[in-house]
Amino acid sequence: MTDTTRRFALGAAVAAGLAPTVAEAHICPPALSSSGDVFRFRVGGFTVTQVHDGHGRRAVEGLVLNASADDVRAVLAESMLPTDHYLGPYTVTFLQTADKLVMFDTGTGAQMTPTSGRLAGNMRAAGIDPGAVDMVVISHCHQDHILGLTTVDGRAVFERAEILLPELEWAWWSDATNEGRSPAGQRVNFANFARRFAPYAGRTKRYGDGAELLPGVRAMAAYGHSPGHTVYQISDGGAAFMLLADITHRPEVFARRPDYTSAFDFDGAAAVVSRRRVLDMVATDRVLVAGYHFPFPATGHIAREGSGFRFHPADWTALRAS
Image (cartoon, rainbow, N blue to C red; front, side, top):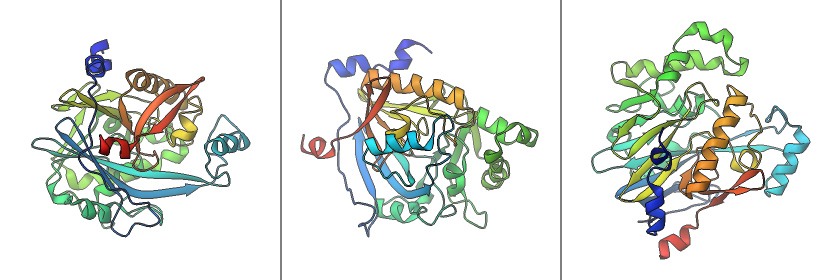
């Protein structure tokens, strides 16, 4: 990948003072919202809509494989987060281009935890009809990213969408002989993969590293969290945005301590290499980013801090007023 691709022509945009602008925004705190948790802004001529799908809750113990629970609690405390449990938010991103409505990952489908599964209602609040989705782009095939492809009884949710997923994800999870070579906690993905993609036979396509999925949207390999985990560079009209998928789980922990290996990572060592590479890139380029497990609306900037990084949520009030 060339340096121009790596920077995706941001140098000229930054020098010219170009940045994504906000067309409209609606923020409702999850605990208070009755109409949904939706945030909308523009990247050049594209419209990005962030839609909240709730959160999962788990114990702090076992979350990080190469640090003690007490060390992790200390990092949580430094970030003003609870230390007796860990919350993982879910945010699904939609991109409206000139002629395509694209969805990145599909959420939990109300089939995972009682505190998640809010996507369908929040899509209605956002005015997004599942039947209008043209393309669903899957970053990787962990449950919380593909459960929403189907209903509980196995029917396709997105009746006309083309489904795109990384070719390495397809190759790994579609081959049952790989099950014994996968971490024990991820072996459930094999049966789940088969079930979720079955209704989309004939309209599923695979893509590789560097593929242009549509004009202004390019895939970038970030392997480790899963065999084919992928992030996305989005650019239009001199503005840029990057979807980080699961390059970190909550950034208050895994960006600040990028060498932590997560219980969710398929290959922890490879995930750390990808995490540092991608976070270094977006910090250098000062590009607007969003992460699937970042605190809603999951969008902001990454900056270097000591030997790690810090997530700075975007100042939406200032952007709306500009």
